[in-house]
Length: 68
Image 1 (cartoon, rainbow, N blue to C red):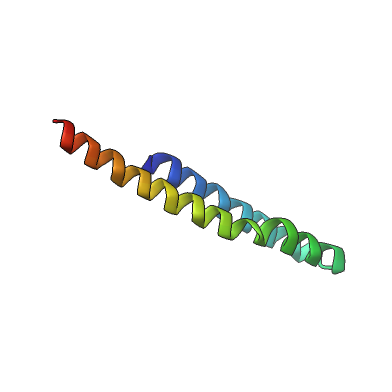
Image 2 (tube, one colour):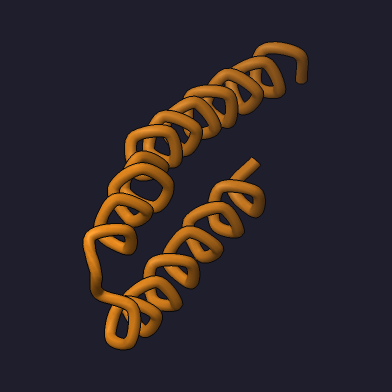
């Protein structure tokens, strides 16, 4: 579960870095709207997904302890 969490975080970070570079050359109102609508709106979803993966990981660890 932690590998998936790490990959999701890394991929989102790479997306943000790429968006920052793009924003240096594309900085009109459309770009701002795109960034808010598609890039920034992902942040809460990524955080929720990571939190959910953390919870699932803890549950799986508890199940393994209980079953061994």
